Image (cartoon, rainbow, N blue to C red; front, side, top):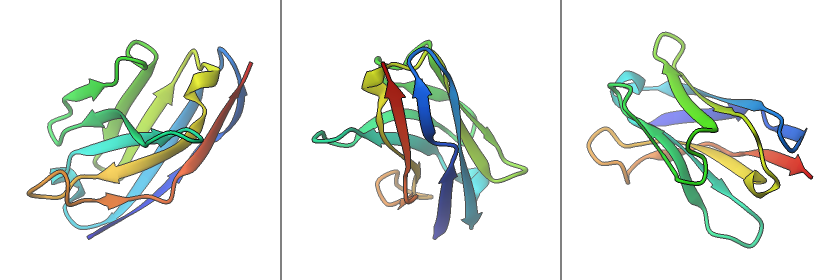
Length: 118
């Protein structure tokens, strides 16, 4: 079991930047793949970015070249650097810790709101 606490959301103008943080407590953070999802109003939750225990990354097409996911295993923290933000990036951003044996059996954070004004 792992507990996740996100921070860093807020209101920003289009073209601006934000950095989200997700602090994890519990077991085996270093062995877990981590991810960021987002959910816009009236839409389904979608995967934004993932990072494996070996620091390999993957991104949704809509954020490639603008967002960067990273992790600091010494701090049990994963980050999402978001640059060149667009109004369509608005939503609640959730941190996700994949299960130790199966990505689907993981844990969610409570979410942090990101609002990008035009």
